[in-house]
Length: 399
Ligand code: ATP
Ligand code: MG
Image (cartoon, rainbow, N blue to C red; front, side, top):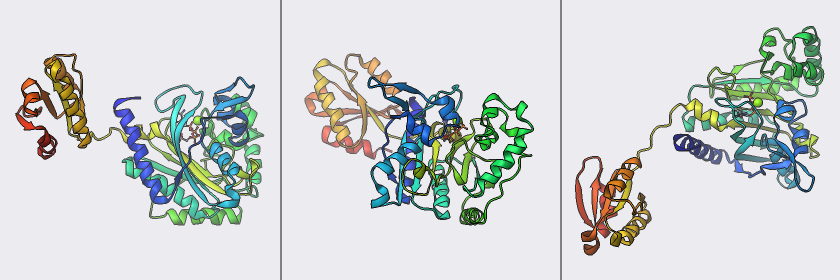
């Protein structure tokens, strides 16, 4: 990844960091490699990630490890093992890093990709769900992505979900023979996943029984919606189920475009995850954004208008002087390239063009003797001699 694509990712990370700061979300750096068991236990055995997409291997010490396919398990482990539960249970974390999934690569779907994620731990209130969603919206806005839609749904809790699960199993069983192999297998274990199936989940979106939330979940969901109303346009989509096993109550997706890789970010509440991993009963809500997909959704990045200088030396005896000029310009905060001193003037000027420098600073024997530098404006072709100590000031003053 290089050029404008790399610049877009960097700009997205910068926008995200700025907004995280506003929300008081702190960085957590999580390991790239974890015990495979961690993902089996947290991401869940009925997910595509664990069933098909994980890169796992045995190390020399016969430990079964995996390249992280997502960030939440690492965050949850860090939270439990560093004993936040006792000391400071309410935490807001973000992470930025590459994830790994064995998938068929295509536009917006890679085997190594970047996620920016946020996790709010220890707050069961609908305000946490709403803040998580608005945080994501503010990052999109700060980065400049405009054309996306937001879908939300509630998956209920362990009180209301079993009834829905059963209704779904009953409904889907009649079509069992027509389901893909994976879905036939997960029909009993996790019927919600059938609705999320890339192959034919959409067939059931219309006809599937609807979730009937218990009064507490209903109230929670209503409050989330009330907090979002007027701040972000969203669609309640009852067929939105999300691929991971650990979600409870609110789930959401930010979508752009109409391809199957249209989810630019996704998340939800996972109130039982920390406990199921051996921690305390800590509620949580979070999301992960696909950085490459978000950059694709932006379209083109506005070109940065930066003044840049390219330093050229005409003779071997001037090289050191020219070299020092470069370092001095940088010390004055001016973006400076150069040093291709083995090439002749033409070759160095060609490189100046390629770097899209606005100015060339040309150093020859006369300049070296006088303690000056020749400044050439590459857009107008004008050139003028400046004493060294006036050079940086002159560059900054020319519009
Ligand atoms: P999808 O349904 O597209 O496979 P997912 O449900 O597997 O996505 P999550 O696990 O929720 O995705 O990951 C959050 C975000 O990470 C996605 O919304 C997407 O933007 C991004 N993402 C997931 N997998 C990939 C990938 N293989 N390449 C690039 N980005 C990805
Ligand atoms: Mg996936």
